[in-house]
Length: 116
Image 1 (tube, helix red, strand yellow):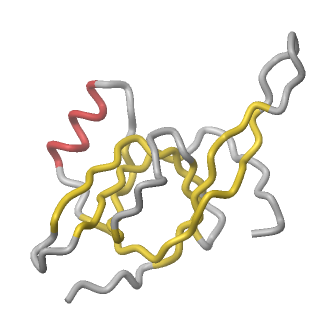
Image 2 (image 1 turned 60 degrees about the vertical axis):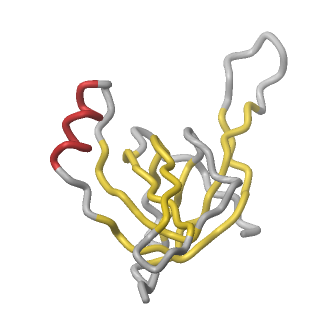
């Protein structure tokens, strides 16, 4: 059985906190957290992402969660932040529904809410 013991990822959605007419201001809103394992990035996935202007730096795998979407933000235990660029629901070798999440490192860091 596969274990998800490479780390814990907290998932946030970005929320525009600017008042109407002001420049958009992104703030993170906590959604969920889960344990994960790193999954092989693969040359094909890497180059297909580059053709679409994305720089995928990691792929993680975890149990299926229906509340995770493209453009959410994943934050690892070390504080590193990633944009979620693709969520692939699959069935693993043991017949369990899991998902593989392609991640792109964020260009700027968001302030992490302290209550999570």
